[in-house]
Image (cartoon, rainbow, N blue to C red):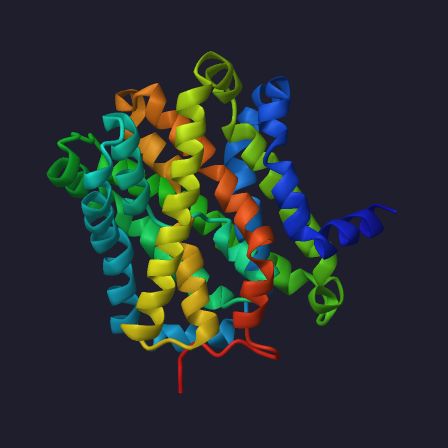
Length: 320
């Protein structure tokens, strides 16, 4: 019965993600209850994606290090500069504008690997960019924040990198162990079930990050509405920028370019919150929380487009 339920969730993954992200706002007590599970909820989708990864495609990207380095420079350095320039004419509240630029400077969300699998995109490209981008962000985020926004971020690089290595490394080790324990063909035969598990965990993560936002929404609905609108526009603009860069600059095929668009628009604002610590104004935190809405809703809204861009049989990492 449970496997049937999870299979149903997996079959309708984007719909459950669309509605599930609103649960944290509607039930703030649940958001507070789930909050302590923040870290495992972050890592489980990555572990499942690594289990299901086509490692041959992963190795193919490993043979193109200059391409990956160029993509990382685009994501972590160029995107925040372009975003800062794009925001200047709009006169947004300073905290909101700073939060949007910091979002553009963040690496892709860890769960983008699972989402790319659900959408039929290039999971190998997603994983390698997520892992390397997350590893590099302690080196890139502080100077970007200081030079573009005048925000001083105090990061203990060894501690941050050590924590990062532990988190990402544990997902890799768990995935390798599970791949050895699971009989051949099981993952392919139970793809919907694994999609369902990933979706449920992603929804619980979205619920956890909404802790405290409902009170702000009731106290200042105008600002929350503005941050929500800004989050959707910024996400879509970055996705379009990423897809365009993938096709025109990096010469990627359509599935890989669509994956780059997904990675560019869906940024790991949780890492930015950790880096800022008590320097983050709550108005910035509100944007980071409301920024989860497009990340969970747009895969459903744009599902026909993603499926059109995805390879019909197998993902080809690079254009011919």
